[in-house]
Length: 181
Image 1: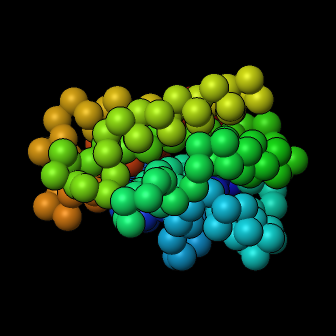
Image 2: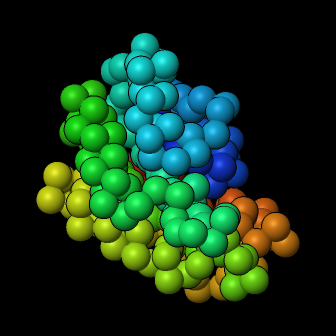
Image 3: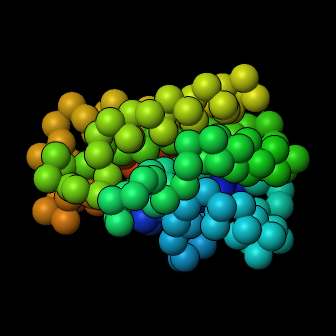
């Protein structure tokens, strides 16, 4: 049986149970209940959950919404350079566990979301891709998938997945994990 770990923010929380259902019974799927929030929090959480993550065959991970949000109007919570550096640090740690690491791009939001702009999401996704791809990290483009029909896949809170969005992302995540084996 393959061991899979899911890491990340509330978007991961949205689809984690469905991914487990899709991968069962061939995979043991670990995820922590806590929200991985921003990339630095995920980095710190790797220490807390090291025993549970150890031995993973595939790790699927995301961070972005918390990092790029601009809640005070004074800039993104995590500056771009720091975001890229932290993603690299997380990736370095994960690659000591398994060479099979997948990073999911940050999903789009509804245009009415004043804290997470599409322009920022695209910039941070580009940073993630250019930082992680040379390290051998596979990119799972959840942004592109969800962006095809944002009103259908993003709920009224302007950021999280609808039931259809959960199903769509869970299927794509499970598919990426199966393909990585």
